[in-house]
Image 1 (cartoon, rainbow, N blue to C red):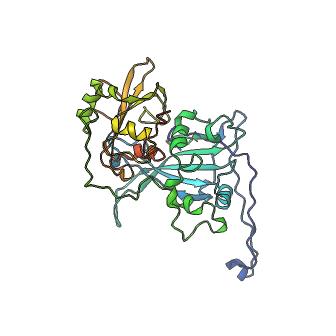
Image 2 (cartoon, helix red, strand yellow):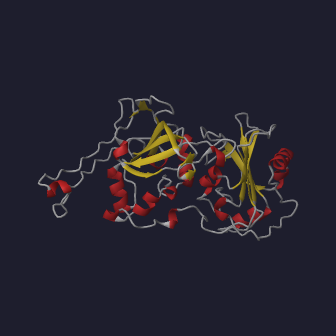
Image 3 (cartoon, one colour):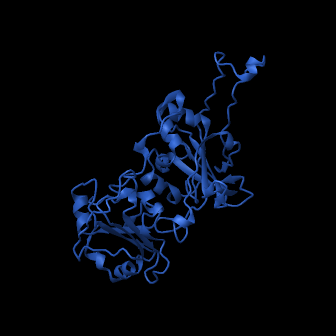
Length: 377
């Protein structure tokens, strides 16, 4: 789910929780009290106009994790600098545990909280401040039949008081990044060990299990090969310093590379740093990457480089994104140099310009060694 959010509501029937077994009496039953049946938690509803009513009681749902991408790790500013605490409805959690699939009607809520203090008695770190927003996503094959994966996303605001209702967001605002990079059915389970550990485990929910590494980041456990040597011809070399790279892009040197057949809609959140819209793009590949993609290689050689042009409404190039593999080992994205700039005349404020940018490799984890292009088609 993204700041611009998409969400939808569930139409699947609620699963009624079984009453607590008499074979395992609770403290109240030992004391002579009756054993109460666990309550069924209702799912949110929609208005007659199709807007989602703000979910209530979601803190009683199953908590699955709290990612954080702080500004300090994503200079100059992270697109999502808040803590994102994610909850899934208990019915959908039960189905996920049983089948390893998210059922029709699945709803998840993301509660945002600002970064507060960076110091505590336990040491330095990132600690939660005040709540700052609420978002939701819902899978509904009937209500959102035209949305990719049947998922829709909603935001109830990023300041309080929150909105009582919210319309579904445009598909491009969130769904494209989820579709390309999420590990399971448009859900970023690779970043939620609770979901990974519980997948298809039945009643146990995967407690006392480390979770599946298969849902993790591509190559995250691989050690970077610092001794690897990268030799690239002058014609294929792409700079990995911001100033040199911007001048190189302005010169158009990359246009001698192999390229996608024609411009197309980006499958990711480019070019807007706040992920509000996608762009028309075209990617170019230097010699090492071109040969590797054509060979169907699962790992590309060091020195591989891709340059992506962004096009404005006037059909002219409006910016670039660049990825350069600096070692033979990807290091889970840490050994790729990531660069993005949304101007062709001013390179002083790039969106990204360093090794291992999390918001870049995070969207590229499902690519072939972090390259998402379908080239060659």
